[in-house]
Image (tube, rainbow, N blue to C red; front, side, top):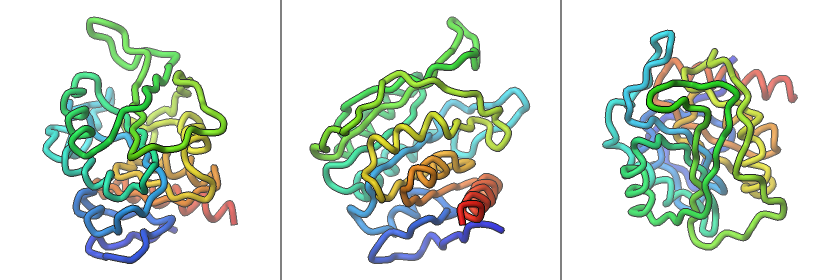
Amino acid sequence: MSAPATPSSVVSEAAPRNRIIHGDCVDVMAGLPPNSVDFILTDPPYGVRYRSRDGRTLLNDNNLDWVTPAFAEMYRLLKPDSLCVSFYGWNAIADFSAAWREAGFRVVGHIVFRKRFASSTRYLRHYHENAFLLAKGRPARPVWPIPDVIDFEYSGNRLHPTEKPVSALTPLITSLCPEGGLVLDPFCGSGSSLMAADRSGRNWIGIELDPAHHQTASDRLAKELSEAA
């Protein structure tokens, strides 16, 4: 059983909850109301033409034409005085930084996710991933701030070529999203961020362009909701 998809053309007074939408995130977000989500946690493509060891690739990873309009929509949807965590590729930081700044975000933190293995080796062996903490307005500081270095369990990348472990995402949500809040992931992939939101007692909304990953995430969250029920 899959979590129901919502057509990207739907415009509502309140953002949907606990739904995964199949479509281009810029188009989908344009149909959602402003100031309607409490927290954004996302791992967008890095524009690096990523190919995993088993040959899997990512849609829209061959360009960064989407990065500025996507973050402009994220800023519009985020409630005032709220936070966004965005993973990024270090070799595309100029594009991401410019998009964040143009949208109106302020950088208020940087997070390193420490791995026990090297994901690739070039001039250096890559043992970590990165994310920036971005603010819209002046969010209150969390009651229990988390460290800016977080251990990354190996997910096995079974469901997605860049699958993030739920265990590393959960502390971000529990610390930075208000209880009962709505978490948005416009590039939800296999749904790890949505799983973390659900297990943290938050509502969630995901958007995914790739139909195969949309189905994977939908099935995964439907199973999670069924088991919880």
